[in-house]
Image: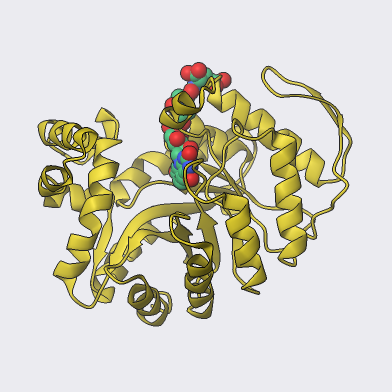
Amino acid sequence: MKFGIEFVPNEPIQKLCYYVKLAEDNGFEYCWITDHYNNRNVYMALTAIAMNTNKIKLGPGVTNPYVRNPAITASAIATLDELSGGRAVLGIGPGDKATFDTLGIEWVKPVTTLKESIEVIRKLLAGERVSFEGKVVKLAGAALAVKPIQKKVPVYVGAQGPKMLETAGMIADGVLINASNPKDFEAAIPLIKKGAEAAGRSMDEIDVAAYACMSVDKNSEKAKQAAVPVVAFIAAGSPPVVLERHGIDEEKVNKIREALKKGDFGTAFGTVDDTMLEAFSIYGTPEEVIEKCKKLAEMGVTQIVAGSPIGPNKETAIKLIGKKIIPA
Ligand SMILES: C[C@H](OP(=O)(O)OC[C@@H](O)[C@@H](O)[C@@H](O)Cn1c2nc(=O)[nH]c(=O)c-2cc2ccc(O)cc21)C(=O)N[C@@H](CCC(=O)N[C@@H](CCC(=O)O)C(=O)O)C(=O)O
């Protein structure tokens, strides 16, 4: 099992560099930085992290093909790969509607846009001069003047929907699935497999990553409480099919949604129950978390990404994961 770590760049980048270096020293193999316009810039964060680490693979987890032209993303990834000595990975997903509404971006045919974007990004990174007349993406003789170090920068797709998962199976080197519970992978992996088989690929070529809300501490209750705020947001953003899958009370989720909209975090977090915590997070002592990771491995998960909050105390949690969970 590979371990990654996710950071939302909502703290000063210097602090982020400290955490990622600590993660690298504790055996984490991947660092994924989220890409939302309102946080610190994803590529500036990755640049600083690349300069402060020397082993961990790193990349956006995940960017999208709407806020930047695919050629700009290709240039950023080639630059990151050169700067990091060949450690870049590209995590790219369809982005989210709320963000695009805020930015006045039309969310046109996300599956097609993602497929076409990945196709042209790979050609550009391979040093080709690209002319492409897609249904959405258009390039006329674009070429990079910077070459990545890696012959093939791995491309991971951030996906949850069935079509997106199938598409990931067809074209991606890895899939980053925002999920923490075996039931979600029971549903997702057959779809990835269907896409892989349709493209004549084997699942061995695909790194299936659980992009999980994780909270680790020696004290299980403290770990559980630290996961509550993140789980509230995940529950609020989950479609009915996911709530049904986990037997989650939709009434309660609607109450959380309303409370979050009003900024009433007390009610929102107070409404989170154990069913939601089990569904949307991996929390507990190292021993408890090891058991949950083993269940994900049995489902075919090959990378576990420790996502927010990581633990009540990030530093302690990174060390606990490194010392107790990664070697297990
Ligand atoms: C487009 C969407 O795909 P989805 O996989 O459900 O997208 C949900 C999230 O994965 C998506 O919002 C991600 O960008 C969210 N996301 C992040 N989003 C961000 O903006 N920033 C992040 O840092 C981020 C990190 C992240 C990490 C892991 C992860 O799994 C997701 C992450 C969807 O609705 N898919 C459906 C419908 C498909 C569809 O849209 N069909 C098209 C027709 C087909 C075509 O597009 O050609 C249509 O209806 O128009 C499906 O897959 O079945």
